[in-house]
Image (spheres, rainbow, N blue to C red):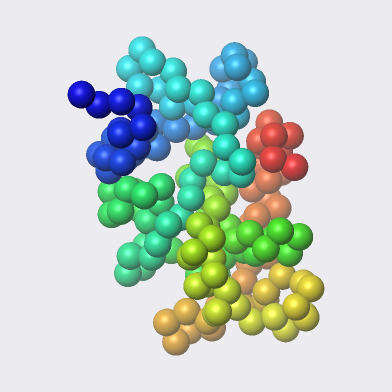
Length: 157
């Protein structure tokens, strides 16, 4: 017999759940910014930051939400973004979940070793050294993603 908590340990369930996840535009339970539709069931979701959490790098992909190679996105090193006020690190995520994903703390610490701060330590990093390539960081995608969906901006800012 399975319960809800044990389901979150199964990679196939995680893939299904997060593939169904999207912004809650239903008008119902608006305190939950996300919804995952599972047949007739509606799972309303709230989280501290963003529901997509990148957990580790697999070759040229980022794996997310503890589903290993069942949930991955193309890694875009030039789009790694560190929010200076919190130190949290972000990467683009699927548009249907708000286009922003949080990089897990353990992975963010690993990434921080590769940041270059040409404008000083109090400012966002300017470059990212990854696999013998220096990438100039795109500092704009994060703010564009935030302003894209007013509803999510209201929930997260």
